[in-house]
Length: 219
Image (tube, rainbow, N blue to C red; front, side, top):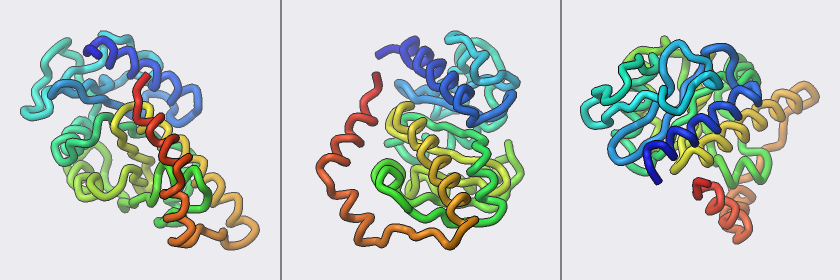
């Protein structure tokens, strides 16, 4: 594994993020950690426009930009604070998924409703609307990153973390699907969530543990 490998992996998941309509235009930002540095999307770029050399290298401890001089995403503090607070985080995906945003306009607590959600995401945290790109948002996220891998931002979007980009990205997909299912079901009646016992049963399944291990391996 090298910094070039990380940059190529970021391009791969940046393209998937745009292709799956989890962001539009220059929205969203993603990053990955490698040897004390984070590689973050540059400001003003659509994610699928970023070339490998354009990911901005930032020293996690000091916050200093250490390579190409491009301006990092305006959410740089959110990423820095999260990496500093939780050493198990290897990647962060911040997107603006339409169903997640719609969900935060009417609800706060996203219930765990189906096995993939229980196994890959677990319980999702929520932060009421905070002005984007500010240290207030970074501070609010800081309070959640040690207890939840997926955090809904009111009127804004979603942040997911993982040990690597693959895990963080697929959590984004699963949370967006969960919000979609919830909103569709709510149009008919109150959705039935999994009970705590059902949730724990899924978490203990050997097959689900194997799936999680696969997601934690970066290709």
